Length: 60
Figure 1 (spheres, rainbow, N blue to C red):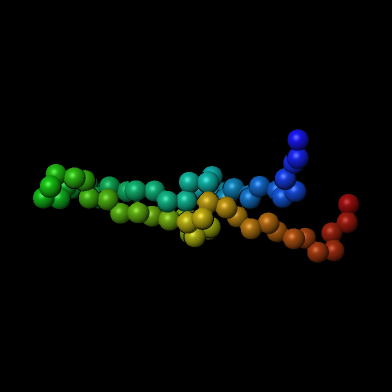
Figure 2: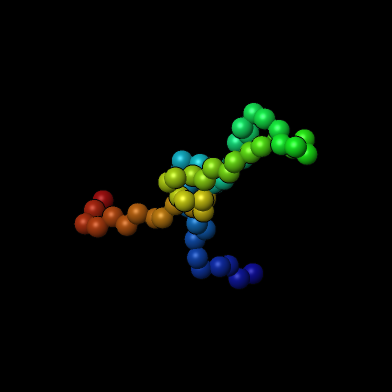
C-alpha cells in the first residue's frame, strides 16, 4: 500500500486544534435563541494549525 509523502500539519499548541469557539453573552434574542459571538484563536488565526519552525545552524 502506498504511503503519502507529506507530514500532517502541526496542531496549534494554544487551542489544541479547536480554533473557533462560540461564547454566550448571557441573554436571549427575540426568537428565544441564545446570543453568541465567535472567538478565534489569536495564535493560529482560526486555522487550528501552527507553522513548523525551521531551526538554522543547530547541530546535535
